Length: 67
Image (cartoon, rainbow, N blue to C red; front, side, top):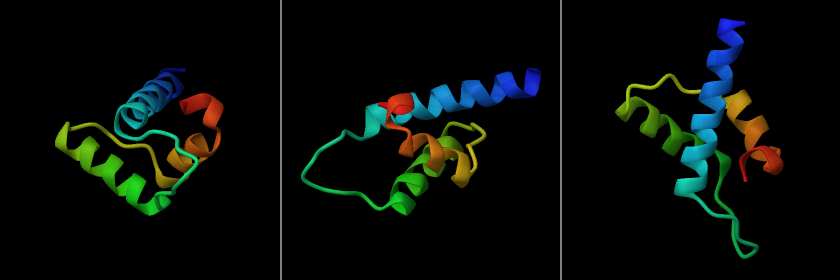
């Protein structure tokens, strides 16, 4: 349960970072690779363990979870 809880905390942190860094607009797109690279940079800068690319991507797709 502790490992799952840590993962949930990382997902909340990623969601918060995403909300603070990007916004949803109907007039443009940002490549997923660029978003993930910016997220990795943020994690490394703040000595945080990042979510895997797959997990991060799933949560970006589920807009209800992040936005």
